[in-house]
Amino acid sequence: MLLQNRLMKNLLILFGLIVLSNQMAVAQFGSDPILNLQNEDKKFLNWGYYLGFNQYDFQFEYKDDIGQDVLVDKSLGFNVGLIGELRINEFLDARFEPGLLYTARTLGFPGFTTENDALREVRSTYIRFPLLLKASTRRIGNWRPFIVGGVYTSINLGSNEDSLDDNSSGQFRMKQNVYGYEVGFGIDFYTEYFKFTPSIRGVFALTDELVPDADPNSPWTGNIAAMRTRGIFINFTFE
Image 1 (cartoon, rainbow, N blue to C red):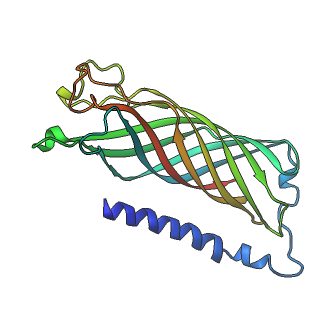
Image 2 (image 1 turned 180 degrees about the vertical axis):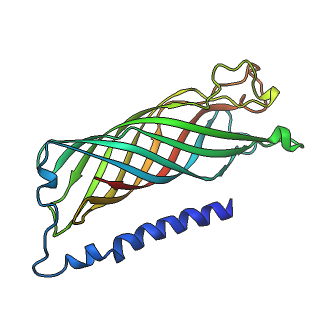
Image 3 (image 1 turned 45 degrees about the vertical axis):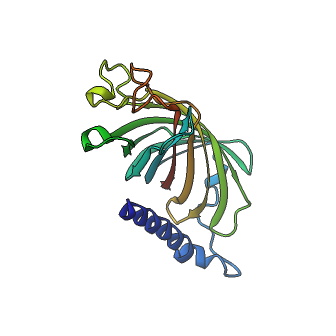
């Protein structure tokens, strides 16, 4: 877990270095920069794709505040998807960013003496459908900061929601359909041939994703009132 946290910190540092050391950004502090892609943001429709990394976590709510919490060992996953953008005005754009996301988490349940009972590995492949609003500042040379936020729905292909087995048989189950919201910020860099955009997003599920065990007193799910995904994305967009 310590190694994974270090990896995420390194990714955040990498993101910062890209923003700070990118030659395109430095060049904009000149008095008369050469503007690239001057009509890029005037298109009514724009298309692109993105690649990135994620680190997903769970937020638990408990029925009784007793005993120890469920531990979550996070790992790095990856994102890939497409972008469709509709221009509203000079500063606002509506974006649809369907994509595929893979992540893995290991849950550690207290009170067990054997690893087979205490640990549950949760591997998830999500198909995501975010609908977002992007608010940008005025363009400064060849770069433009923005904030972005909106709602999403996703399908968890690894949910096992319909499985008849539960934790008593070693099967951890989650709901297939998830709804939530995401917020973030980034900077558009205008190169000679395309627009490159690094961004950071926070993702928060609104729906309870847990499928409880058949036994209401299950030592795994009996005391869990709700379980919701939360995570962080680092995306690199090309338009």
